Length: 226
Image (cartoon, rainbow, N blue to C red; front, side, top):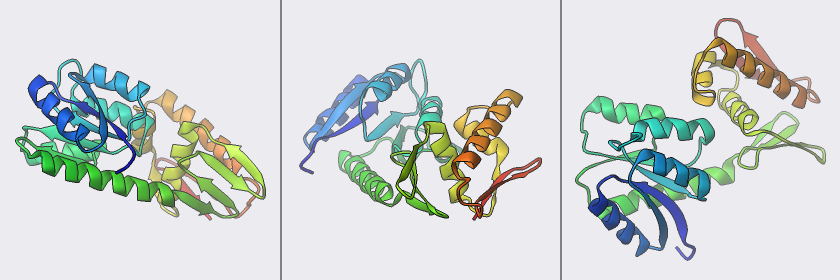
């Protein structure tokens, strides 16, 4: 790697955190180190990190809770969990929350570095392919743009993520409760009404192609057809 890549490492054991930081910085990474979940979240909001390494058991805010908050805002940044836990259900929970990899302590620095590089490579490839055709439109998920015939519509973060999930589940019902919890954090009545408004906005932005339909499947969710 010729260009320094910024990553966040959240680890509450100062000695281990420093070892990870120093090891990664010899490999051309710029490491922002946090010792608790709240500090890590502040770094996420203020730094341009390409990847996050989270210890699961941290003070103030644990790694799973922090990952849930990050996933409400960003579906794409790679997250690696570090943990002393070895139970299968802990591993499953980490992946269900949105983790991309899971490394059990103790681990070698070489293994961590290989996993980081693999996720960064995968993330770069994904971003190159996140330009999607939707009927007559071109949807650039990374830049949150919907384009057609020299016209470009800038989508909000939530519009882009909602459309992305609809596209990924094309011709299938997108579960209402699941997407509300993922993008809004809760599937209560008020968030449900908010999602209905966003669906209406997307319909308007896609209206120039009358073959594109976002169908309300009552009691289940929405289905994008084209």
